[in-house]
Image (tube, rainbow, N blue to C red):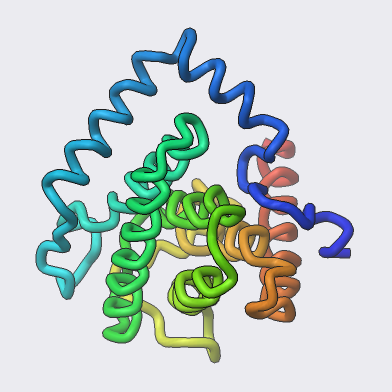
Length: 220
């Protein structure tokens, strides 16, 4: 039962609201060097600006455009830790820019990158700032992001055409391709009024895939 397994509140991906104070204490304490390095990266990017180089490249990992997903999650967690509004605003900007980039590529049947990690980070960024988005922003930012990510995550024969250098990666491999994305996408968006039916379908798919991976690795 998806509704019983996905908490109704955000954040949900990798930590929840009760964990934020511990994360903050750690960031200002033993992991201060990591926190300051992340802060420097995002502050510099805010000054430099966002630029997607060769956005229609044949394969996404031929450049670093996909890495803006990592930066989005860093900006989001900087906001949760510091409470500085500039990081919330920059996370929103990154999410909008990433969504446009993702939509451009999927509409041209192009991959995002060989690994799905940066896309998971994009979903984390949205989930982590969800509580500070207005209802209008949850629609204007959330809906197009969901649609773009759904076109990346939901794949297979009869669903959509395959993409060059699209790493599907099943439960017997590293499990780091697009096949893992339905799980994270469903958790980030379930119950938020965008497409719960699709989220339930993806949740079941993702749960089964990860269970298969656990079973396979246990047998090894």
